[in-house]
Image (cartoon, rainbow, N blue to C red; front, side, top):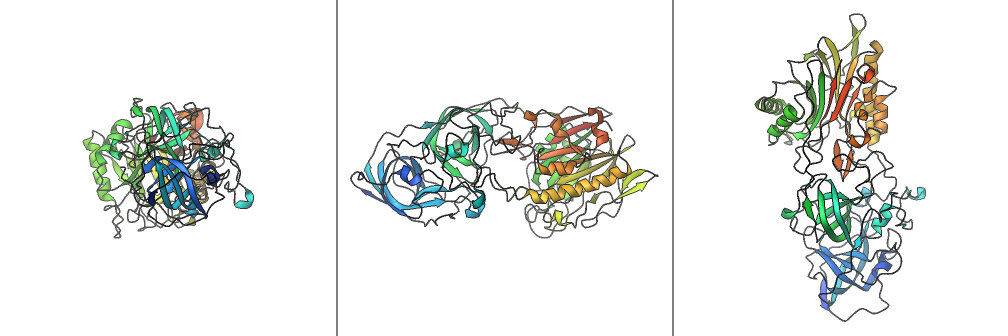
Length: 609
């Protein structure tokens, strides 16, 4: 069985589930007036029987989950009603290993509860369940109800209804419209046996034996077979998560563009790690799509190559240094300047006050040389201990990696964790940084518990280039796309808006002195190229997100729940954008692969300053 480190959070929006072992007895069939599953599920997201006792609910056991903290079984009525909004299946939470078997005809008595994955405050939808059950086995070896086929024709194009303003935009009380909205359609199948066929993988397998597939291969497809998230209005309704009731060791190691050939069948569950999920007791066969890692074009002697790469909490204890080095040397073609995000201190997550990252950087730069790359130099500023967010004790920060044979770094003393970098005028009309490297307004409330931008002054072929490395606040706190609140609230963007304004103001200070200054602002912005964060950062033309030079179906740097999306960006000033004299590449080496060394794809731009 899959070994899950995730635990069931027993927190309900309507009722608290009490752990109880189910009692199993043999009995005769249920009475005709017994409450049925479709009565319990009803036509809204909250059962009319919530918190109430039900007796002798009949059904066939379709699947059993005997692992983890959410042990139980799925029950389905083989005699459905005529209402497409009412599900005929639900989960029976036993808390201990169930003793029923697939194919058993049973009746269940217990408490109807609304289980909220992640807790009520998480905003997730709730799952209708029977808890504290008494189970009576009527017969065994029964034929299972035929699975409902989920395909491109059955899933509506519209994602979700607008929530009720009087209920903080909750959709819980709204009547389900499964022919109109995708979230309603999936809810109307909750707990029932469903099936997908020849489903294309749009989110790679992960450590928890999960992957994402689509039943709509024509829905915003990327060139590699993924599904691109291109606006808040198109959440991509064909995405469904796949888990397994089998052994996690046998779960397919899938990349984006692969196909889960044949049929995949199981009950439709809902969880906080992917929303609607087919928990498969019949898994299709993986067919490779032949995905290969990308290799960027090499810069010419006259081109300045600049990249951003989130190396995901890199610290000296990691075993990925050689792979990161190979990626920088071979896949990125040894850029002249690299903004590295999530470089941790010398002992990683050990929370002992260490902030220096020289050991981490030596391991990386040595590995790059060993991989055949240049002997990179680097610059950074140590943060104040545990003040920049991320893993406690890790003290992640941005680092400038640069090839001194191609570019030079202008060092100006005085930059530290709390001193703000400024812009001054030199040689009459040229901007210069007051400290280099330096941090942008590090004591501002915009950077509370978040990384402070690192500004540096470089010289390439006699021309000054200002580079600002960023790692904006994460999306933690945002509600999921499958939230009970629609549209899903995005509270985290408030801080990113403040951060974007701070960086834009700093760029304005440079351009006020020289409107033709070369400025590159890059990093993990933790927000989309179409977001308000990006618009604030771009300002009134001070910057422009160069990933928008790519076709829309190629704009992605990250994969979240099967949605390929932009989090990492490189923005350039008007002088660098003018005439389109640049080339941009999103170098896909991680986000689409099950064996990724980071969850981000590096981004690269070749400039002609």
